[in-house]
Structure formats: C-alpha cells, structure tokens
Length: 239
Ligand code: AMP
Image (cartoon, rainbow, N blue to C red; front, side, top):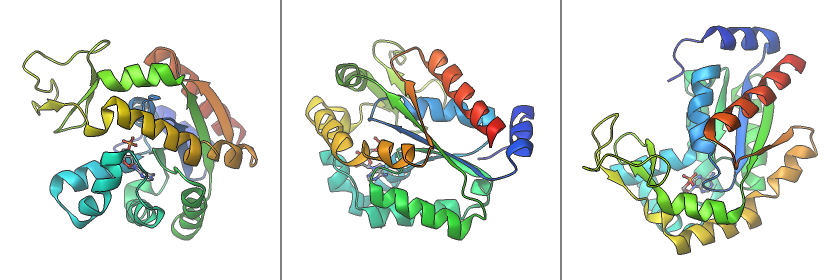
C-alpha cells in the first residue's frame, strides 16, 4: 500500500530521517478519512484506519468482526485490547516501517499509551505528530446523515456534495453504495458523545507533549488538505 515515494516524500523522509507517524484526531465525520487518503498520496505513508479494518472484519465474518459488531452498531468504542491487537499486527507490516497516517486511532488514553509502547517496541523511532480536525456538531450530523460509502472499496459519497450515481454503484469499483448502519442520527449523536467523553481528552495528552496542532475542519476538502500539508511540512522541516 505504501507504493513508491514521490519526490516530496523522499525530501521529507531525508530531512527528518525518522519514522513519521501522523495521528488525525477529530470527531466522526470531521473528514479524517478523506484527508488521510490524500495525505497517503502526498507523503507515501500508509493509512491505518481501525474503522476500515473493523468493517472489513465484520463483512468477512471473522472472530474480530463478531467481537466488534455490537460496539460498532451502538456507536460505542471497541475494547482497547482488541484495538491494540489490531494495531500491533498492522504496525508489524513492512509498509508501516517509515510511519503511518492513523485515522480513527487512538481514541482513548489507554490506546495512546499503547501506541507509544508499540512504536518503541516495533519501530526504532518514535516520531509522532497529532492534528485535530475541528468541526461543529451540527455540521457533523448533517454530513454523516448524508454520507454514503461503497461497500466494495470504501469510497465516500455524500448525497448533497458528492452524490453517488443513480444506480447506486461505485464509480471506482462498481461495488454497491450503502449507508453505514452507524450513520443514523441517534447513533451519530452517541458517537459524538463518546468522542467528547473518551477521545477529546487526547488533545491535552498530545498538547502536553508539544505534539498537537488544531485545524479548522469546516472548510472545503482542498482547503483543509492545504492546511494539513503546511502543518506537516513545518513539522518535518523542524524535526
Ligand atoms: P470510524 O469509521 O473510525 O468512525 O469507526 C467506526 C466504529 O468502529 C466506531 O464507532 C467504533 O465502534 C469502532 N472503532 C474504530 N476505531 C476504533 C478505536 N480506535 N477504538 C475503539 N473503537 C473503534
């Protein structure tokens, strides 16, 4: 998934000379997944999305999927030990050697501590940088209620800003386009409450270490991408 590094990546990697792990923090629907996909293209680090890994496990009917199912359907967090097990496996894969873009992980203080431990154990460098995408709750609810995804490749569509084809088949892979079960309004509101209670405290965790930047996520995807790129480039230059 890492693919060949583009020139920007090569310069960045040469300048910072360490693994570079970027954490995208932010409420569900704040645009982490969309941004992560673009950042992968630019910087060459793979996207590590625990939500995507869990949804695939669910679709494949694995043990992991059955462990996660009830939590995901209710918009609650899957237990930390399950998540850390997934991340450990993922970080051991060769494409994560120079770093990763974490999307939807960590989501609790225990996961953040666990990540530090894993990076120390598995990667030789611990170079972390966290960007939090800030979007007002009412915008999140309208974004997520309108969100549709491809059940085949995970491509995002939005009934308002990026409607899917009328036949409900993905433009990229032809897969069926569906609404995620947890994108119903009641579940969205619970996911936001869970975010405030369990994940938002990570802002303090990372700002206390001088590793947090805040970005306005209520702008166009291109504007947000430009902002994130500037933040990451500044970090790489100064690291
Ligand atoms: P996401 O696609 O990131 O919004 O994740 C969808 C659902 O998967 C969440 O509502 C949780 O139930 C579960 N999930 C994903 N990532 C994590 C995580 N890091 N910790 C706990 N649960 C997670």
